[in-house]
Image (cartoon, rainbow, N blue to C red; front, side, top):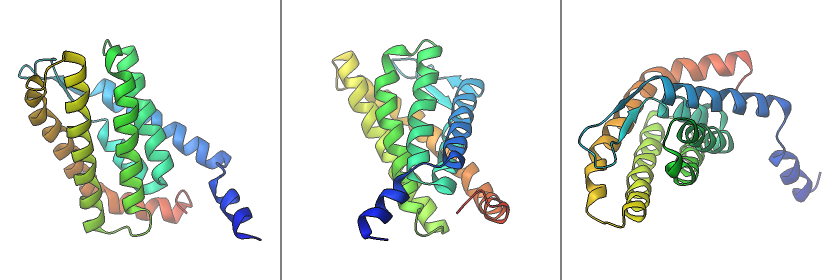
Length: 180
């Protein structure tokens, strides 16, 4: 098989990949929708939710494409269906990039330091991305500062939960053939 043919084959999504991505997308949506707290400190009424937990797990277990699609679409769908419609395009890009980054960093090496690095990078993407989005929406570069603590809490809680469960889940996924 030529290099081009191998690259084309590896970029195809199998039925298994589509099913795992769809299930991950639903989990991101449900965890964002069902488990969230509105913050009174942020100018926009910020939100802390647990949608990043399945996002990070999906990206680590199933790769950057699944992380990007499940995260970006799952949370943008939440925005569309829960009154945060204005945020959906920003969320699609920002959270999609977070999922892609976590998957890319952990794709080759599934180690504790890599997991931490991946989630720190995701946190930076979230803070910078939503800071810019909020500055654009509100035409103000000061107001977005009030959202940073909520974003830190959101990613910190998700990272702590993921770090506790990732290895048992990774081993189970590998043993059952869910993970390549």
